[in-house]
Image: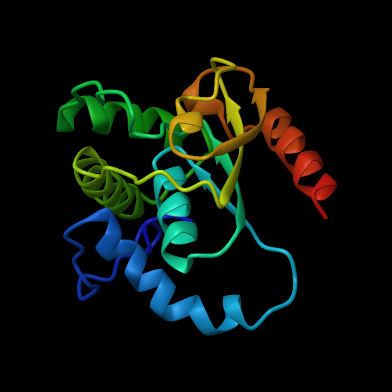
Length: 180
């Protein structure tokens, strides 16, 4: 789950006012296909996308599994981050994945900044229907146990900018396969 315009340059796309509003977009779009399937679902969110995945599972109102990839649960105050620091961090992250389109990079930075601002005001409600598997750089549950049932915690290597490198992606993929 991610901001729907992360990899888009659509200037006419809807503007979202909150995490809940953003997720309503997904729920409206996917509800019939998600709810009419008898297959097991696992929501996966990386970084701030973890909050989107949690909120989507909450809005669907059914028992779900969630894989969190180094994303905080918003139970602790978020460290203050200004736009310049965010831009530098995103350029570093995107550079590690060899994205070369400067216009796309600018859009990615803009959309991730918008999501960061929305996430500051988001207060997730406890939901024990959601089972969480946390993959984190620090090896902790990142406070997800305060709002959901944490089933497992796994340690990732590197720093936050490397959470989706090949080694960590292999670990997450192997775990995801084990759920089915």
